[in-house]
Length: 321
Image 1 (spheres, helix red, strand yellow):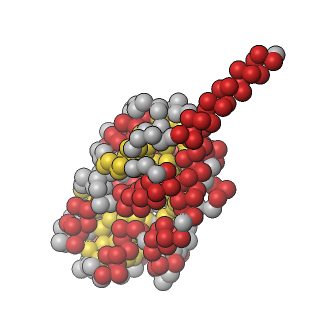
Image 2 (tube, helix red, strand yellow):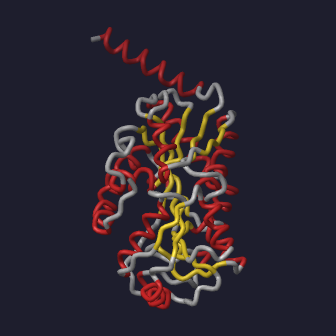
Image 3 (spheres, rainbow, N blue to C red):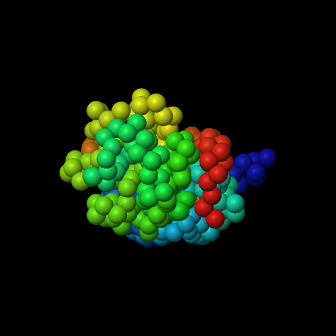
């Protein structure tokens, strides 16, 4: 028994030492979307502070495609050595498992879930000259013009795509989806008047709304957000649509538990930094409370999110493959 106890003690000590030494070289932080979008912006803010706290470079690498599945799959298949990290989120972990018939990874089993980081709302925005100023007017206009209306997304299977599919289904229309390789190009076409609407993350939508270059018709979340306090939710306007999003940190399955816990601790410190919180808040993004930032909480959240979204996605007939 004493020999077994000694062996466990040695293993525990080695694991602790490994975590204390990690990282010894730069960490690749995979963002599964194109540069310039809302997820990319949040990842870069977070990476900068994580790098300061870990005294090592956190290199953001954009690996877009298949609504985020390509980048997420790269991390799922990476060596579990603590040097490849994924910016996870609702789309790649909570919706893709249902949206694709044969997803490239298991969202629950193929990752070591590190920490839930932040949540934010989506906003229904339209081109500036669309003849609708409320959600009710938008629905009426869409029903009359659905054959000619187009909505943008950051790619087939992305969160903006799924949210627009649900909106389309709920109001009984069949509008045209135009997938882009990221949010930036999609917003450029909306500003040029070539796209009618998008269900966009608030961190992207808010600056455009402030500039008066798009219209905001509804907050697609359970509650209004402070930076757009006058914009009613879809529920307040009679439509039961909540497309709130979240982001998380994920390692490949098999990454040492001590490294997972160390990154969770450092991520907690990072989002408690006043400058990080203020920057997130300025974009309408809310850092989740400490009790929801643990690996254990995130491991419970992901299967519950898959279950939550499976019904609406199947009911809408949505698929991305």
